Amino acid sequence: MAKRKAECTPEEWALIREKDRKRKAKPSNKEWARQYEKRPETIARRKAYERKRDTSPERRAYLKALRDRPDQREKRLAFIKAYNADPRVKEYRKAYNLKKMYGIELQDLTRLVIFQNGCCATCSRPFSDDTKGTKPHVDHDHDTGAVRGLLCGPCNTVEGFIRKLGLTPAEYAARLQAYLDNPPAQEEQLW
Image (cartoon, rainbow, N blue to C red; front, side):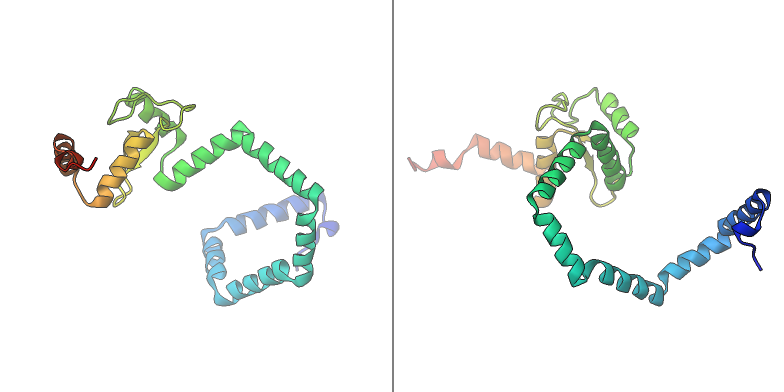
């Protein structure tokens, strides 16, 4: 039978804890834990606990009353505003979103900006973090997920729009040139 902490000397307890850590770190135990989490009865038990904890009428009434108190609302909004203004939070979110959406790190984005000389790959407009529309947007292939480069906001929008129409960039350019050469409003006297 396993000893309790109160029954052991500090040295004995350290040995027991070390053995326990090693046992839990074995790959077979980790695999068992993964399988345990996937069992229907485990999932059902967890869902029942969450429902009971979050949706009991008393709990909902308490949270609603707490939310509706003006002083609590102001405190919460002030905290959220201060939290979102923190540059570390902004940097963390940016890194998290890059990793989640495109599979790249913040350093990869920086290297790509340097490789493109700090400019949009199509219009060569320089990137700037303070001007809307000139922040670098990661352009990626929606079929494969591969990152193609960095574009400014307007170029990224146009590129996506062309793809959505099902045209190639050359076809779109030809249509645009035909429109500019012979605008429909000049053929008919509408005005």
